[in-house]
Image 1: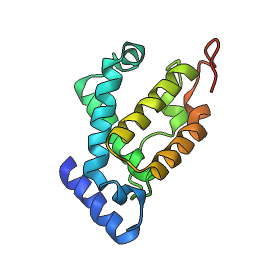
Image 2 (image 1 turned 60 degrees about the vertical axis):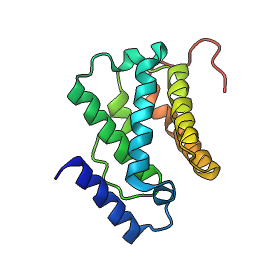
Image 3 (image 1 turned 90 degrees about the vertical axis):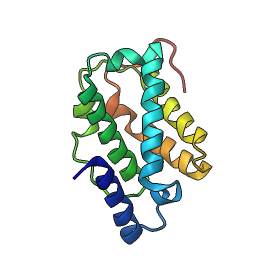
Amino acid sequence: MTQDSALLELDADARETSPSSAFLAIGGSAAVSAVVEEFYARLLADPATAGFFASLTVDGLSSLKRHQILLLTKVLGGPDRYTGRDLASAHAGLGITTDAYRRVSLCLLTVMHDFKVPMDVLLAADGVLRGVEPMVVSAGPAAGAQR
């Protein structure tokens, strides 16, 4: 099965199991995929975050994007097809600071906003991002970090 057919399958499953989900409300897999592509384009262009991805091959980045699409689909109430590691395991040892995490979170929310995701969905996504922060941050707060 190609990634395109897998994404279409997500949409079909969502229409059957969660027709009122935020996932479908924002445009389903096409919208989530576009958000993820732009999100990583911005992270890779930002000197403050690009280093976290420097060791990834093209295949590694593609795999990371696919995991992100599936994770974001799940967070938005779409079908749960995420089979990756839990967040703590996936980010262990990466030295992610509070500042870096918050910068990446803001980037994701900004991209979603730029793609016209409704405010209630943005607020819900922000709540999830805040809730999982302790699972991702491993280097402790940066000096002077505030929220």
